[in-house]
Amino acid sequence: QVQLVETGGGLVQAGGSLRLSCAASGRSINACALGWFRRAPGKEREFVAGISWSGPSTYYADSVKGRFTISRDNAKNTVYLQMNSLKPEDAAVYYCAAEFLGTTRLSNPGFWGQGTQVTVSS
Image 1 (tube, rainbow, N blue to C red):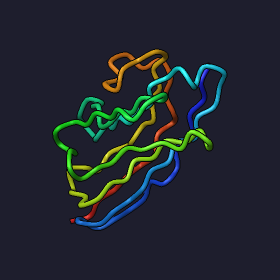
Image 2 (cartoon, rainbow, N blue to C red; image 1 turned 120 degrees about the vertical axis):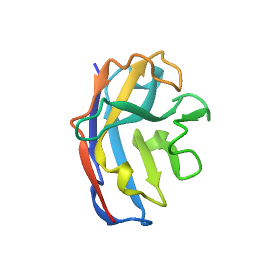
Image 3 (spheres, one colour; image 1 turned 45 degrees about the vertical axis):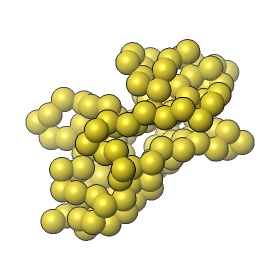
């Protein structure tokens, strides 16, 4: 099992920045790809960014490429999502996800955090 706990959401003005954190735990964590998804009101959940646990590979949705950066601290078992130049359309509940033996695209995550709200005012 893998447990994921997100922190760092909040309210920010358009153009501002936020950093989300995801603390991961569990015996299988070292074999998991980790990433972030989001769900805006009335929309389906969408992939945002992913990172491999054992290497530096990352992958981003086109909508956030160049603005968001995913990183991880293996010593702290934590994955981060640095979000810059935020737009109103980035507002959503952001979920941390993990996929056992997955790729950076996290096509089928088996583990999810509880979500953290990001609100962007225009």
